[in-house]
Length: 339
Image (cartoon, rainbow, N blue to C red; front, side, top):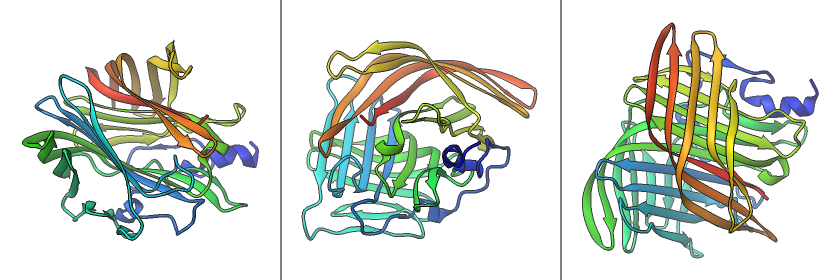
């Protein structure tokens, strides 16, 4: 195997990994990784599925990878059970506070914030007519696949990383929509991405998703190298109840049906199959998209990134230490094209 190929297998030190204990995460993994450099970018992502049918997605971009220069921005999307999504996209003004701690998640961007207090996360985003003020308590331990580094070139000191601090959490608090505040309760997810090089030079894009079955939690990524001869980076976590039963990059993802997006011209992954088979754990799961809930063209210097968020149904069979379970339900998944 070439050194260049090993750069795409840094999660488990240059080879495919299979970890049944998954205890590599530290609170500092969710702290800031970057320095004050325009070559470096970092964001913290949160999404929510509330019991009243509302969904929300919030992102803190300490330095926004999608923009050149990488300015600090914040995003909040709210998806009502009926009607069009509502959203706010803000950029910090010169002189506004932009702080992130290195020992844990503690972000202050203007008046907006997210903090790991030790027992829970607290997220506060008041963006005029929409907003969130919620606490999140983990139901599954924080996780990273191996060392959490998706790609690394030690010769030039560059890397990109992905951390999942809340694979599945209980969220409660308030949601504001059109200036009206409602109590909310439901499920939450939070991850964290960072890097110190243009991601599009290494990767062409990714698929990502997670599903919440009553008994199981699954989180996966499928990060596609720009050079098709390089290995796909494929982190996956499966938890049963509150216990992580496997952390690996031994995932196989196939797209069984594409659908052309007429607006931007991309082939979208409408039906996917996930397969993973190793010591003590076997996964076979299919996702079938019901609708595209978000399509965004994001400026990136002289070009664009294109982002899609999908609402899908899933069904699968998980086998853990000889016990087989059928799972089904509704979930979000996404595709990003770094064109």
